[in-house]
Image 1 (cartoon, rainbow, N blue to C red):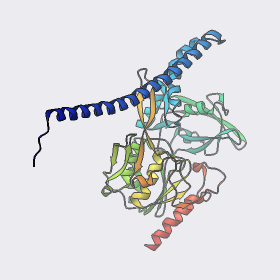
Image 2: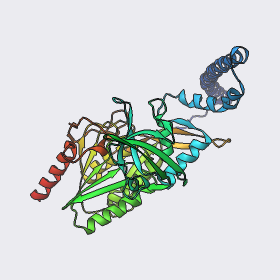
Image 3: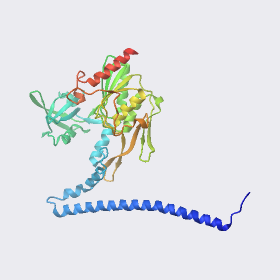
Image 4: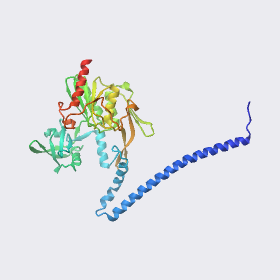
Length: 404
């Protein structure tokens, strides 16, 4: 039976609903307001501290303030990003940004050497010389000690800035004084040599591929290498991404796409702080019919970790070595008005296998843990007999081939 409701009761219900809605709105508004005020207070305190420091410098600093004034903008920008306490997010000056983009998009160029600083002996050493490079033509070899670059003596305090001169896209001359055994020699070389991100060697039906960087040209380099190995009768391949960290998630996904079959659907996704997928990396290629193993270590980081993780999950590849660095995030570039830029962590990388295999902060664990027995962790300086991680991977692939 239908009952009629009086006009007075209707008005009362409407007033109660409006009051409830207003109360709820005020609660949320108060929370938002308090958050804003708190943020304003924090910002105000930060600005006051910065202003106080600026006044102290202006009044009491003994020295030329012209350079200080010129560098203040970039220093503030760098300070903002450093405040995140995220080593994968950082500020780049205009020249650093230009060099970064040049490497990522066009590949690394230089005289054709890989170097490392030996802190035990305080020496800058050559770990690898690329075939056909100016360095190779001048006779430089792995193990040579670099004493001077362009006449400046290499020290612990300046080696990083001096090493940058060995990597340039411009056809500039670089002078390197080096020592080998009991003699010292100076080599004059032109920079501009295209340094590959993929190097390889074969032995019978086995292949070895080292990926040192995940740049734009890495996927095409790997494709050419795999085709050549396929034509030469190689059946099993060891990928080496130990000590590899440079590059981007995007270009790592493109490199994985060369190896992975199309049927896998996707390679990875990038999830933003709201929990939404801001980017998904699908597969397009047909893959290759090889058996794979992957070498990893604690310096395998970022894009190299995704490569190892996806080869494990998509192709059931065994991972040999030690747990990786645990950098499972994606970074994006944002350019500033003055030509500088910041590289900012913007998403969590979700690999093929989903949430259960997120490796950020934990690292990718090897399926077969093998500790390197050699004294040096400079992978490119090790002979095959010194590299027990490589030997274990090769033995596994050889035994797998016999059992098939």
